[in-house]
Every structure is written in C-alpha cells, then in structure tokens.
Length: 304
Image 1 (cartoon, rainbow, N blue to C red):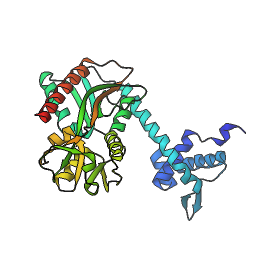
Image 2 (cartoon, rainbow, N blue to C red):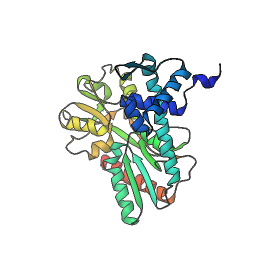
Image 3 (cartoon, helix red, strand yellow):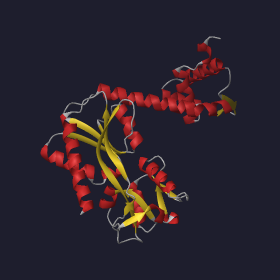
Image 4 (tube, rainbow, N blue to C red):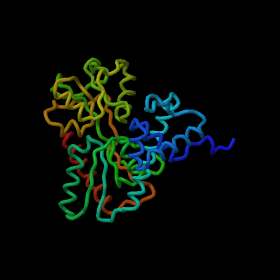
C-alpha cells in the first residue's frame, strides 16, 4: 500500500487539531482562516487516507471518535514541536546583537543571587540589554537549545547533547525546621517523616535527597511535595513542617529559623549551561565571573 495513503498531511493534522481544541468545524475554520467547506473537505480527505472516522456527526455536531481521542496526545506533541520550531526560527530571524544577553535561572537563584549579579553588571555596564527569566531546569534546557536563552543557571548538571555544562560551586543542602531553632548538625535518620516537606520528583535536588533518605531507611513518602525550594521554605516559615533546601534559599528567605547542617553533609552543584556550538561572549564571561564572586559571598556568610 502506498504509504502516502495512510499518512496525515500537516494541513489535515491542523484541521483535526483545530476541531479538537475548538469543539466545532465552524470555529476551527475561523481559527485557520479558511472557509468551513474547505475545512470540511480537508477533514474528509484525512479520514479517507486514514481509513477510519475521526468524528461522528450527531445533531449537527462533531463528536470525536475513540481513535481521535487516542491520537490527540500525539498531535499535541507535534504542535509543541512546531511551536519550538517557530521560536527557533524567530530567534534566528531576529538574532540578538552583541550588546544583549538572555539568562534563565531556577527560582531559588532568582531570589537573591542572580538579581545581585545583574545589578552589579548593569552598574558597571550601562546600556546593556538584559533579559532574565525564572524557570525550571528542563524549560531552561529547551530554551537554550532553541536559542531563546544565552545562559542557564541551574542546580544539577543537566548533561544534554548540544550543551556545555560549567560547574560554578557546590551548594550545601540544609534542614530548616522551626522545632530546631538552635541549628547544628542533624542526621537524615533524625528527621520526622510525618513533618517532612519534599521537593518535586523532577527536581535534581529531590532525586539526590530521595536516594540519601532511602539509604537511612526513610521510607515514608512525603505527604506534601512542592516544585520550588522557595515554596518549601515558605511552608516551613508558616509552621507546615520541615524541609531540606539549598543553602541560598535558607540564607535569603526571610523569617526562617537558623538552618541545620546535615550529617553526613549533602550538596548540589550550581552550574551554568550554554550551547556547545557557541563560544561564550564577553558579556557572558563577565556575568559568569560575577556569579562566582557572589556565590562566594553567600557561602562565606553561611560559614560565618
């Protein structure tokens, strides 16, 4: 059988997706800026090429078939890729000049560290265009690969093809707990499982912590997991339990008790990511130097 007879063309996928998302052929045609008969014709050809119906006609409405619902997640993935491609081509078309830089950082580093670095850099280099986004690590990786960011500052190394990982510092992980206001060292086995606030399982810090806790026999799954160290710290501040967060969050989040060190100590790498096929600009090198400097200030404050 000719393969083209069983493969949907892009226009057919667009019509299918528009009908699924808008709920009607008329609104789908409006979204696609085509006539309703033209959209209906494309849909009919799509169903003929596939060999099965995508919609049932009931009372003037199009009701998705079982096959259409099975296809939808795969079509969603196609459109996410198309959106990524559009972002990439836009960035290539409107390429940045040498006087600007775009940075993505994880939320914990956006609380104090990165703003201080940016402020220091702007004071010494007025007129430079800077764009900073607080994002989660996987999104930073995607935007770097799409050339939507120049630098990413994350916890963990996020080794990926096409990216260079530059280690800046090892950030200690600390326990914050209002029931331990004196600070000091705490063994992981001494943490109360019933009060423990966990991090999202997608966070590289969470993966490190989960493995370390499992080795101590910490078998209770946290009843609360949050996506950011900041939110974990805020829950601790409100008396919602205890959490292990990066030292920068423990240092700069207001109203927290004195953090406790862990025994044995645990840390997470703070790294800068950039595209492997691009040499770092002088702006990026200068910002990298300031990141190292400001991290040194924070780590010294923790040790004091």
